[in-house]
Length: 497
Image 1 (spheres, rainbow, N blue to C red):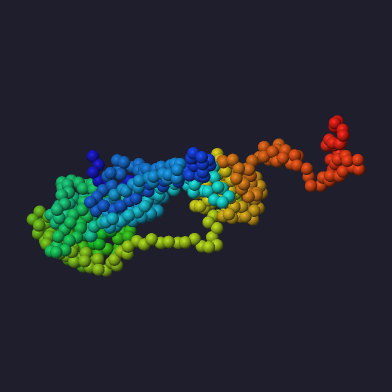
Image 2 (cartoon, rainbow, N blue to C red; image 1 turned 135 degrees about the vertical axis):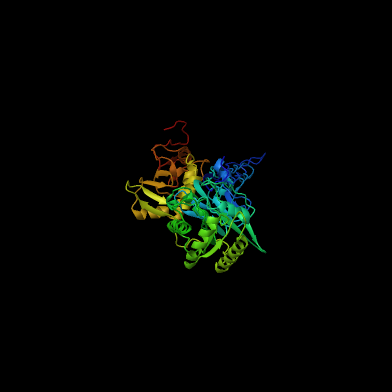
């Protein structure tokens, strides 16, 4: 059964925002009391937080799909929907968040380090929030925005002060088991250690951590063996400790050759050239091992290495090694500038910035890009004409219509914003409140008069125009000269002409 996982792919789905509500207040003896639709709640975020008590990504290995809760929709009587609950995921110290393309999104080091990896969608506004002087009773509401949905890669890079590197069966696990409280698996066959082991070492009043990395072999930096999979765990170490087997049973191997081979792999992996190195000649409890260690020690010291002859079995030489490692770690810590806490960087938009870009693709479609306009598209219910008209007004105020005209667009040309494509027709005339959910500017122009136009015509026919002149005939007859087709009433005559 898998007990250690240091790389997982997470499928994230932040919460969707709730839809706004369309409602009109109704009370006894108070018809049409005004809009009272509430706003939708915001969707929940997904946040990563470092927990020092965690040392593996095992939980995400079995549950890679992560989803935050959605926001609730608004309701009448100005009741806003509840916000979705944020989802907090705890990760080990040293977790790196990557995109699927390999871009580093965050490097989480230190207890309680936090990163909002996925943002929940905004809740849509209800018609009470959308009411203004022109739209006193909006017949529409905004839709909730969908939350972020994408995949990220989590990689664990152990945070340790000393990294033990060496060939398989060189005695790294035995060494870390005697200088710390770690209890790694120990056996007499290669690749016994399949996962990195961390141990805490006490040197007087000082404490440092040691990481035992699974055995390296030639070609590890290119994926051979287990090295490439776990080399990332020594990237954060302050000191590299070469553990060399001075009692190897393989004739073609010797401590100096092992050191050169491991150094070649570290150089191929890259990024570790500035780390101080120390060398341990292990297994001097074996007579042949002590003889070989005494033979190669001068050659290694001539290369500038600090060399220690130790035995994990008899614990010979371990005290000197521990205090030397502690001093090297302290020296590296003093030379390294302290990490500055992350700061929130606010970059306000420039006054003359449009907030969108406009270009024409190869198919002749005018493509508009921008976070604001794409958010407006997601919030618009295209089944509601009034909502579409409201979107047109917002785009016109932002300058989209002016930019399209400047670009040479003609009415009827295709325009794409986000995933929505439509034919562009410039907004003409101011909005006039009509039946809720409608916008007269979007109605198809036909030869037939509307009901309102027919009613106005009937009223006009009942009223005489100002240019009609009344005159009285000499014999008392009354007639009109402005309209010869209308009946004329003559005094003393009961008939109509």
